[in-house]
Image (tube, rainbow, N blue to C red; front, side):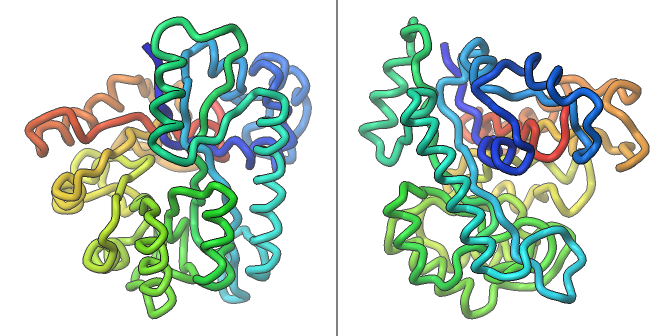
Length: 308
């Protein structure tokens, strides 16, 4: 048996957090002792050797670089060109890991099936981890016609927004629809045969995207608003829509998305008693809405800016 994790920010951890993911989690934590520049120093949970030990044979691995306008106080890059350059640096790390034999990019069904077969029983020691390249938030795509260049680099899935206002759509904590450039980008994704990641779309943008986009959809890392009410989660109506589109929803391990009484910045995972059973509650809710288990997966988001 092997596992597919539908959301890991591997290149962000390597390039922004300066983590050598070819080392073990224990080694990375030891090296970060005493560092305070990131909130999760010494608390990381993801590294390539540990993924192999856990039989995570395939993952959806991200590029991420948010462009923020002067009126946006979120962290990010001050121009789309800077954001694009950041994603290209992240891509270079993935390429370096491919050259070392640590990773293998999967760009079509044939490659995916072959790699799944490699991991099906007893993969060779040090077998590469397969990855599907995804872009979390489309701000770094300077213009829609730039998307074809990213597709040629292996990009196969794309989420239009992350947090706050975006170039092509509005994300978590924000409101509003897509706008003309978002519609154009979705049409280009359709032409290229790409996957739309519905995660992080605000409600208005979600429904507009579902109306416009005709291709395959997934939600790489999302849970249920009915269990933990906030706009980062999907409503039952949204979940039913995704089920109708044949989407799989990856259960996410962010503690604040698992417990209704979580207070961000105050509650800690240890004191909250959060467990994997809380993730299963969200998965079960989706199964009850679907009437089957064909629409649930795992999208941990581990080390997506936080640690254990």
